[in-house]
Image (cartoon, rainbow, N blue to C red; front, side):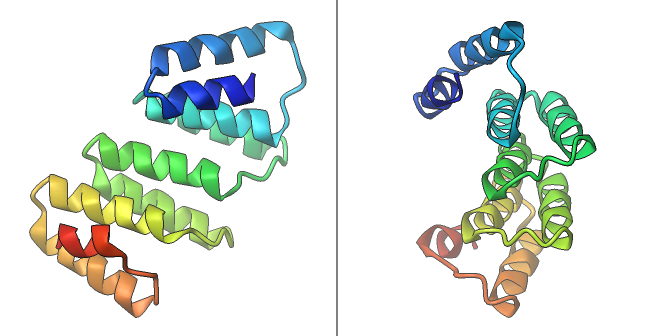
Amino acid sequence: YTTVANAHVKAACTEAALRITADMLRTGLELDSIACGTLVNVHAHAGRLEDAIAWLSWMEARCLRPDVATHSSIIRGFARARRPDEAARWLHKAESEQVEMESAAHEAVLDGFARTGQAKQAEQWFRHMEASHVLVGTPAVNCV
């Protein structure tokens, strides 16, 4: 189920991904961190951020540790939804939980600020990335 759902997400077929995850839930399989991470990813990618957060909370309540990809899904989801302040808040939350976030998550926040016309915040985030020694790639430089 998780492989097929993630394949649909990569193919930008979010409705199919949601259908596959619904099928997975109907089977009654025990959900592990991989299955839950897939649920977070699919819902975040579909723009259903409240559902993605609910699955993340469900994981944490059962002591299933979300990985970098799971946190990144939420961060990218908020950035795509033009809510970069919330994306930044989730990135800080992940880092406060000792999750070593990849540069792509930082770049998603930066891109979110840039796409919403928040030039000052975009530059501040870029400077934060530099000060934190986050690898600044070409996409990040193009956002500023």
